[in-house]
Amino acid sequence: QKEVEQDPGPLSVPEGAIVSLNCTYSNSAFQYFMWYRQYSRKGPELLMYTYSSGNKEDGRFTAQVDKSSKYISLFIRDSQPSDSATYLCAMRVGGSEKLVFGKGTKLTVNP
Amino acid sequence: SAVISQKPSRDICQRGTSLTIQCQVDSQVTMMFWYRQQPGQSLTLIATANQGSEATYESGFVIDKFPISRPNLTFSTLTVSNMSPEDSSIYLCSVEGGTGEQETQYFGPGTRLLVL
Image 1 (tube, rainbow over the protein chains, first blue to last red):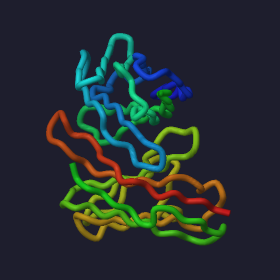
Image 2 (cartoon, chains in turn cyan, yellow):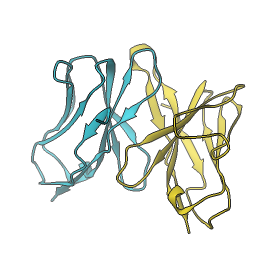
Image 3 (cartoon, rainbow over the protein chains, first blue to last red):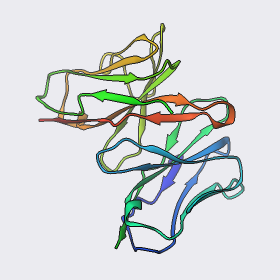
């Protein structure tokens, strides 16, 4: 079993839809959880950062962490064509700089 | 966050040759990281490079294949040696940013390598 599992999609939604992206993980020691967005031919950019369990909201984006289920989610409200990108989840253990990534989910928002 | 640049942005190389990728940061950073992103695969850490010490390689990656230099706090190179088509990938460098619980990594734009 991989440490981090992420459905690669692709996922195609109409503009304005609510998008749900998810990752599961096996290492209960992970404490820090991140979502990166990667546009085509660009490097990943940090989108959301969450420590331990709970929710974090930033504009149209909400990150959720459920450590009891080893499950993290990213919700995008009122999705826009500019949200079309690959979304990577990443996580790390406290005290370690090493990030473990999911494979990424490719999202297309159609106008 | 730091501004990170990489050179070259892309290259096409012949098997058996080597390519050196440069990573430049606009501020001094302690740790720099090199990743490989193969199609359909997770972003995978190759090695961690601290200034003034040998790079630390992850399982499955060796110094002879991926020698790394870190001559100062703003620059690093990764060499992909004796390349084969299996080395075709995107290579990314990253640096640590933020403080305390907000520490994470910020990435450069990547180098797209095709080996024929």
